[in-house]
Image (cartoon, rainbow, N blue to C red; front, side, top):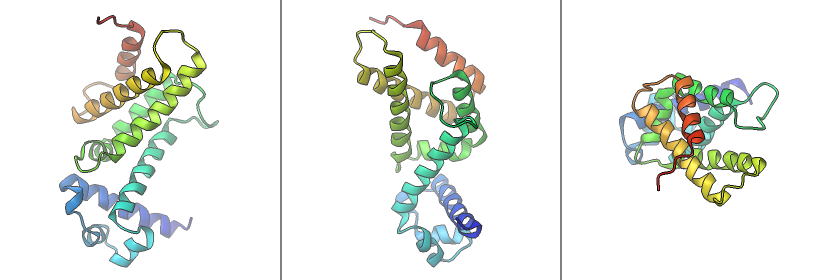
Length: 183
């Protein structure tokens, strides 16, 4: 993609995220986005059909940026490793302002939902690969764990990251290894 086109898209998305931090999604207008990005309305419409398309593409872009930050240079990870999780938490910490807006804006549950879906897909692969005999349905386990991980990430970001990425991964590992018997 042409660098100018990519730069315009990036400026528009950043302006959009900035506005989401200040106001509800429903109150945001294309003109407001254009003004914040210092482009005209036509430029916004050149890249996005409307603010809903901008929202969807922003969610996908920022989710993929998070995913890409976790992958090693060799390509996709084949297992859920401590290093992969540390990279994810580190990336989230470095870009906390963006992900705080995307995860906590009440008008746009889209990002949280997509993140949960992505995590669930990866946990499903890991659970199936490990072939654990726990007596727990694999889909139930994947759903439970993905919602737990997403909730933990959201809590960590909202609480201004009170623990380091390494501490968060260590705590997650201990919880999973503890096999808590609550009932």
